[in-house]
Image (cartoon, rainbow, N blue to C red):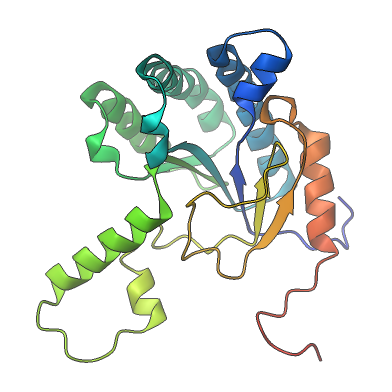
Length: 235
């Protein structure tokens, strides 16, 4: 990146293509997920080195529970192992970690591991890494509505965008500036539906396990050439 290139404060990534990568290499789907974890490390390091403030990764959607139990179980185990293995590196690089989603429906041992990581890294002041697990954009909006009704059961006046955003799971986190999706698919798959109203989208055919710093750099370069008008006329 050149000094004159504008840098997004918040990048989110839909990490897609682990299964296709495994099939392409004659391996099991779980092998693709393991290689995808290596790409997570690479992307996190690059984002922190580049000066990105927030990096969000869509690790496991609410809809992913529809996959075979063997695969979902292996994914949960991989997430626990990744968190335990990477926490020292996250501390070394001053990265704070947040987990977002319907976490309290996860297995107790998974939730405990996630909470330990958040507590350990909570005092770090560098980049914030947000990992979405058991998440869907529709769930996020619905739980925000329920929280709002619980807090104000006799609400009579209209609520503002800003006030409603305070009930989302991402409250306190700026909306994404750039969304990257790998593997050639061009959809947002129920990810941060409210938050990505004015996000710039970047789609790449690169499968997630093959996504490296050079690919991330290309995405940031493409973003720097965009003109964000937020519905307004450019002056």
